[in-house]
Length: 145
Image (cartoon, rainbow, N blue to C red; front, side, top):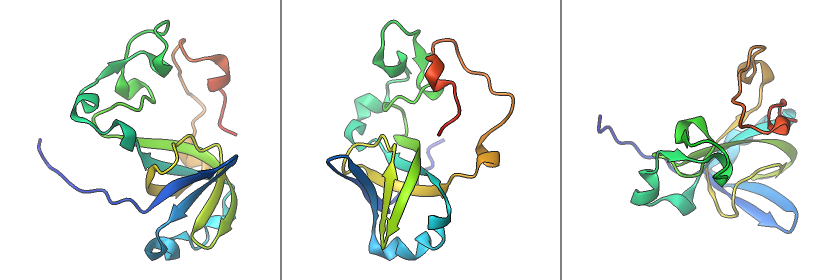
């Protein structure tokens, strides 16, 4: 199972004070056409600060680095250590300015490489029968806002 492929960053996360935006490489700016019609985006980015062979081999963690929470496999968490360091975050789109997406709620670190952007379309990401583990805090069990 050694099929390899490359993922190229299409932009990066920029933070200045309380402002956050995704700066898209100008070559990909035409792909933003119509994105301003959406209130929320799903940003996929790379956990680049964890890209080491050792960290990619970590397969079990305590959720949110809390030893009081039960040990879980990384595929059952949002841990930044995993075999492939793809992260996803639902955030609110505040404004579009040329090749910049001004957002709120993006949990990526500054300069994180952005590898994809998808509009949030609720019926495609929700279901009426969601089951979540007990270790999640009550406020994380509600729908994204």
